[in-house]
Length: 192
Image (cartoon, rainbow, N blue to C red; front, top):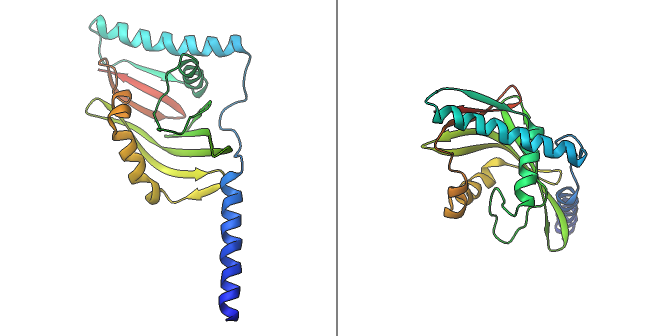
C-alpha cells in the first residue's frame, strides 16, 4: 500500500511539472518587433526578391537563387496574416503572430496559440526541402512551451496535417521555383 501511495505522488508531481513546462512561454526566436515602417520595408524586400526570381524565369534565365533572411520571412508572414491568409490551417487552433528563424541548415518556428483560454507556444525545428513541386518539412525538434516532445510522437500527425488537401495546396511551390532550403542561416530559393 505504501509503494502505491509513493508512486501516485511521484506520478502527480511529474504531471504537474510537465503541465507547467508545457504552459511556460519560451524565449523569442527572432529579433524583437521593429517599427512598422521597417517591418513593411522587410516585407517589400521579400516581395521584390521573389518578383526578381519570377522575372528571371519569365525572361528564360534559369538556375538563379535568392537568399531571404528570417526578418524578411517574418515580415512576409506578418503581412500575409494581416491580409487574412495563413501559412497552414490547423483546424480549430488559431495561430497568432508566428516567428521564424534560420539556424545553420534548419528552420525554427514559434507558433503561439490559445487552447481552452490558455496561451500555448509550440516550437518546431527541422529541415526544409522540396519534392515534386511541393515544399517539404522534416522535423528535428518539437516543444510545447518548454516541454520537449519526442519528434517520433508527433511526426506522423504533423505529416498527415501537412498532407491534408487544405494545407497541401499551400505548400505547392510556384512554377518558377525548383527548390527551397536553409543554408548558412538564410532561406535559399532556387529558380527552375
